Image (cartoon, rainbow, N blue to C red; front, side):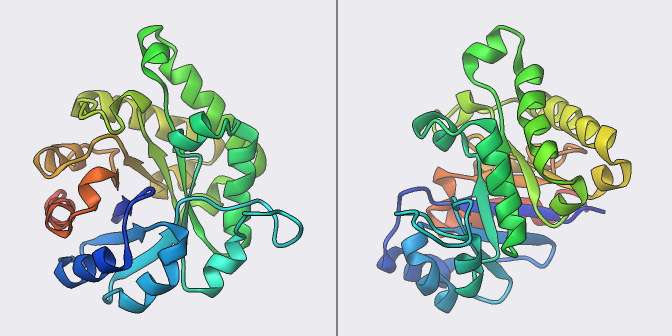
Length: 249
């Protein structure tokens, strides 16, 4: 059985004081894998504070190991400082930084090369869904990924489905909508590698909160969550973790 993964994406929020408060109040479970992804400048401090059972990572990486790439961070650097995870292709970067599918795929391969487990984000905008193109968009994004990385390399990481229209809006896909897309994604993975499709976790990101987490986690192809705003408060994030721990009992 796939172990539920719950990841906290703090985006450009947080402080040293907030990290101390968060770590002291966080409630974990052995029934789910928990990851915190703070701004990269706080990675080392977060590693020092993290309780047993909490893994750390970053929200983006560069593609190179080293070199004249001002502002970039290599996966190998993150790993050296105790990070074990990296988000790549979050919709905010696809939109705000205009990151194309092939760059996201290259970053995913760089994460694996550097010893990090990638959370590779895919998802459609509201306009794309309203036009009936949501599956085509996600398939295109995954095709680019599979051109750069074999599916077995993703078994330790995850694919994150995030309907762009449900991020930071308070809206969320219904459990049925989310399950439908997760099932579709697993089918695409299965077409590449059947055994890997049964092991790769596909997690949902899109205004996950304590009051909707349990129903989302109960879906057969939803293996966890990439949590944004609700992860900034330890009490809310702990409630989501608790829902993940009991979802498939």
